[in-house]
Image 1 (cartoon, rainbow, N blue to C red):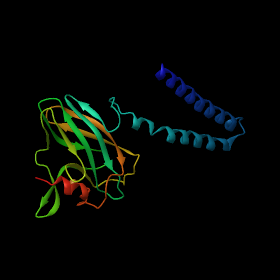
Image 2 (image 1 turned 30 degrees about the vertical axis):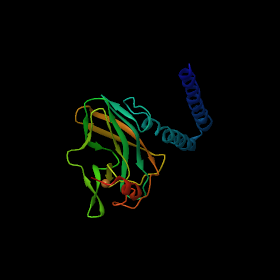
Image 3 (image 1 turned 90 degrees about the horizontal axis):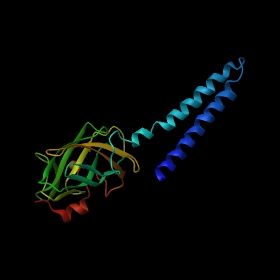
Image 4 (image 1 turned 135 degrees about the horizontal axis):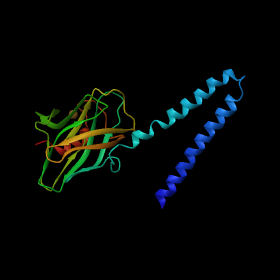
Length: 210
Ligand SMILES: [Cu+2]
């Protein structure tokens, strides 16, 4: 019922836009003597197109659950978020659970960067360092792994543009057993941004790498 109602409202709104566009076209383009009217009509059409374009981005081809969540096989992802950044480096965090016999996140790709890596944060003689996780991130049988500031994270480098809160980022995650899954993660202001070594040092102190 609700869904139908929404659809009707949208339909009417859409019709309104079409009608308005039509009226604008009529009022602008009326008569054979209206040579210069052609330009404004084109302009109006362009504006409507530009406004409508972002809509398909929010509607992925595959029916995705809510933002920051995804499910594939016995693996589920929740709370995924990308840290807002003014430079070209950021990280994505999430919780990965499996109800099965365990799995392994082997790779992550995203259109916003040619370089997304699975990272861990380790202490090397008192200093925090990040490095790529060899072989991917293991999810224990019927267990979970939390990617968070100061710990495991998806490192995203060479961003094509800075990221602001309220944007969303698309990801494709590949699991060893469960396969591939698409994920839409919201951009949020997360912890401190202190560059490569940052990743939230307050949390890192408590997390203490093995
Ligand atoms: Cu990193």
